Image (cartoon, rainbow, N blue to C red; front, side):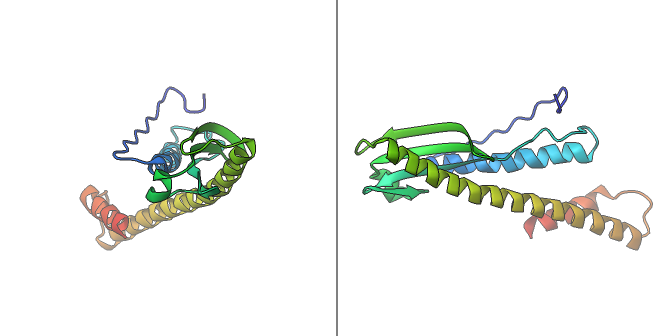
Length: 173
C-alpha cells in the first residue's frame, strides 16, 4: 500500500552460478530496491518507507564434517550438504533450501548451518547499510558539485550533459 500503484521489478540474471553467486544477487537486489525506494521518496512520489527490514542471503554447507559459511568451488563440489538461506533482518527466515549431497545430516547439523547463516547475514546487513550510506553520500556530492558548477559558470538553468558527466565521474570513483 505504501508504494501506491507502483511495481518495482528486480531482475538478477545469474549465469554459471553456484549458491554463493545466487545468494549474492539476492543480497545485492535488496540494496538496489532500497536505492529505488529512496529515489521515489526523494522525489515525493512515496511518502512512507515501505521497506521495514533488510533481506540477505548466504550459502552454507557441511564440508568434511564441518559447517562452513560461503563454500568455495572446491568445498561446494565435494560438500556433504549444501544449503542456501534467505533471512530477514530481525531473525526471520524467508527461504531455506538444503540438500544432503555426500552424506545425510541430522537436525543439529541443520541448526549449525542456520546459525552460520545468521552470522553471515548479519555481516551482509551491515554491508548493505554501508552501501546505502555510500550511495547517499555520492548523491549529496553529485548535487553539491552540480550546484557549485552551475554557480561557477553562472548558469541559470541545468546543463544535463554536464550533470551526467559529473555523475559518471562519481560512479567511476
